[in-house]
View 1 (tube, rainbow, N blue to C red):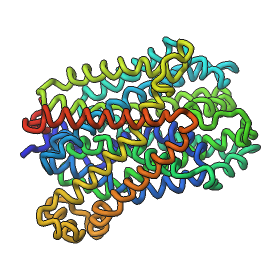
View 2: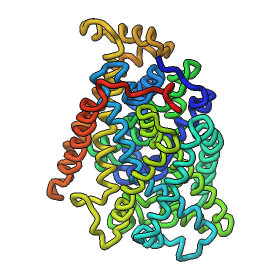
View 3: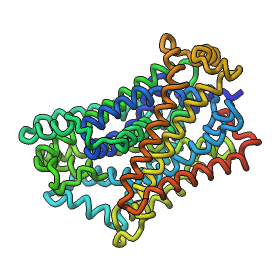
View 4: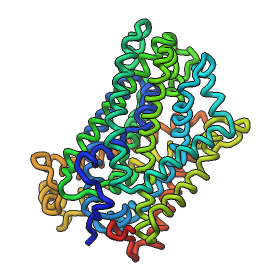
Length: 510
């Protein structure tokens, strides 16, 4: 039986909550949420996103944290301890975050660039064209990407308690305060704010569709760090003193608040600086991945020298939010390499960071259009391609499998006995998952409601994606094919190399 090694585990409940929130709160809230909101009907997208957090996100988070805690091990071992034939899901949970790091680090590099340039602003820098010239440069995005990845690796090398937890306790509250202050300022800008609020708060369901619903679910998984092994890895470093249900709810509330407040700040700012932006044919790229990097600099520039200070603080905190997310992504694979192959933490981190950096170089060139936009995958820039594979297909699969494993496989007994969710509730409670009064509700949700919702949204969302891409020569086929290939690789590697051998646990960490 693997036990938590205290030097590697979380020292306190609040430390775990803030570290988990640090993983959740990142560029998904400040970058992904606003531009997807703009693309899929404003408040219509926001409403579906909140429903996904309530009915899918919280349940999946509890399931994943508990999978980690009951195993005290990496993701592969965590699934193997429930059922030996399910370890492939843990392999998939290592592949997904590794792919995400390869494009997330590029975005993290962008935030580093904006941070270090905060005190060099002039009229040209605050112009959105500066952002376009930066990302299209073949060298600068790569340089800032390596800086960002190096910072992430250094924190990972410090371990869980002395690296991740200590940083999260200081930086997460600071980020929240700064985001709130910027939102308050944006609401006080005056002219155009009403237009921004109208766009953000009034739902336009005609722009939502199943594609938007799928995007909302994917955003919930992405933002909450679900379906990618992170909460399993973090959960493995907790003891019985951590209240899983309460912790999951607090993380989801904190994460959702940051996303909603960030949207408030960005859309009111757009309304003030470009009141025509919300009109059709305005030419403003509201759906662009660079929305945060084009809008907020205008807000900061309007504040004069004070704006330079605020800009530095904000983008520094966004960088830290991105860091806490990437270190959690990197920790999943690092934990497995350390435990399975008995490799020192520093060596394992360095190897994985170098691999991710090598892949991130063409991603940076692709998304910025360097070399005349020749670096693409099947008609997509590589960031979009990787993002679609992970967000749209693989993360929902990962979260769904986690729910099925907890809802159906932890409990021992006949199939007829397992059909009763109250038997599942008692089995989980005996196994160590104590959720109090909500335990029975959780058993119903994790067993039936949440997996079914994920499956339905996934199927109809993919169908909608095919309809969207008909005009693009069925390019979505390549995204779906890429996801299937990755899943096949994960399953094959597990059954060939890892099913019948020990895959390590936390007690094996050196």
